[in-house]
Image (cartoon, rainbow, N blue to C red; front, side, top):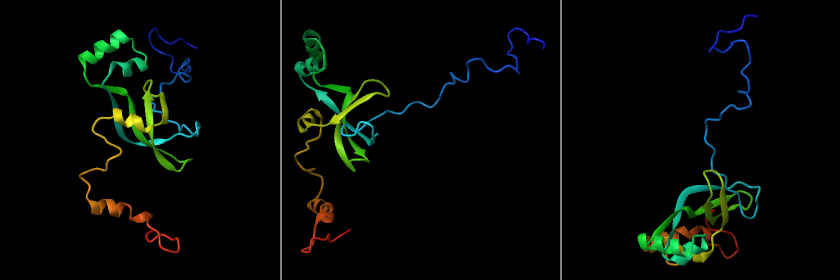
Length: 158
């Protein structure tokens, strides 16, 4: 067999090492797993509520030195964390949606835990205790309508 000219690959010879190192051009999606069921992937609706920090102590709890945390808070009175947020996630094994505190480590790796109520205080423009003032009483009542039961214990609307 005659060798292929220099600089050109032999069309008959198999590509050396290419099949095992074939590059996947599709980027990996984020992998979120249920805190109660670590093997169960969970999905979100995409709406994220980013955390806002107002004090240097909160930055120190996240691993920043005291001096550097004070400099950052002086430069940015309200610091929005781009790697921590609250998101409503659905677990098929639990069968319900829950609010989770998500911490992003890199593009794929995330830490997910149930969101404590006091964490909502660090989210801007959201008050979880008070009802939304733009929603009318009629709409609020109609949203609860599917939970109403008859005297015999069955639901009015299914």
